[in-house]
Image 1: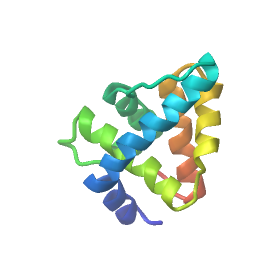
Image 2: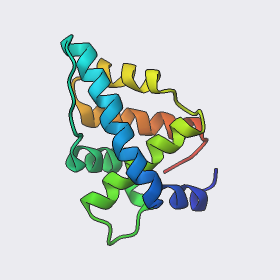
Image 3: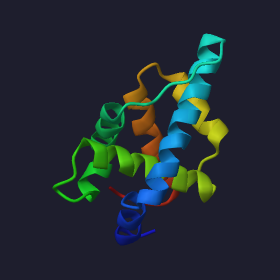
Length: 121
């Protein structure tokens, strides 16, 4: 995948909408397993934007993109990776469970996707 294809993916609003639900689902599953009880949460745009910045994904966005745009990029990328079988949901849940800091976990997920898609941010 080249950088222009990656930009198209992370700016896709449809992928971002689906990705929002997907990220909340996998993070809720991870918390439910850690806490031993069903838990439903919404991952904040702040956490996702920080992960976008830490992973280098933010540098691929237009300069005018704010926190919401960076969060949408993470959402689009993660659901794209799931759809293209670059990362299974179960693997993402395990990674999210393994680190109590969600920013670090999402940064790790983005890095793995870059690696598997042979991308450099």
